[in-house]
Length: 130
Image 1 (cartoon, rainbow, N blue to C red):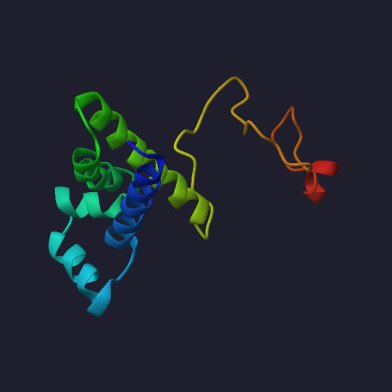
Image 2: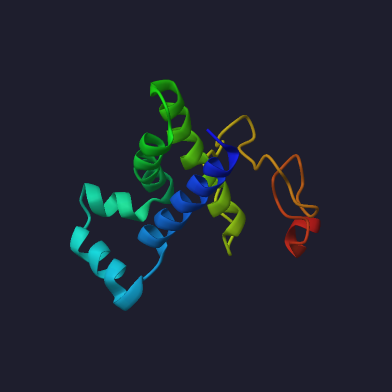
């Protein structure tokens, strides 16, 4: 497979996935499809960019790949490339997929400058300084 097909396939998967999951489409056609899909499997699939990119990338991998191993690798690579483009082009920060909660002191892993490491309380609070 030539490199430009990998780039073109990734861009096409990102474009179609973004269209189906986040845009209104021409004449609000995509919005109408999402409303008709409801809250079932198809509706939840259209709400999740990550899930939808796997489904959209499958036909691209099938038609552009040669052999089973290459098609499976392309399937995952197209989806991953679309996700990277989605995260890079997001206007608002995308929430991380992994959160760690708990521990001995049950405080955030990364503390701001005004946070006490021992208690987890903000130092800017006038009552905590006294």
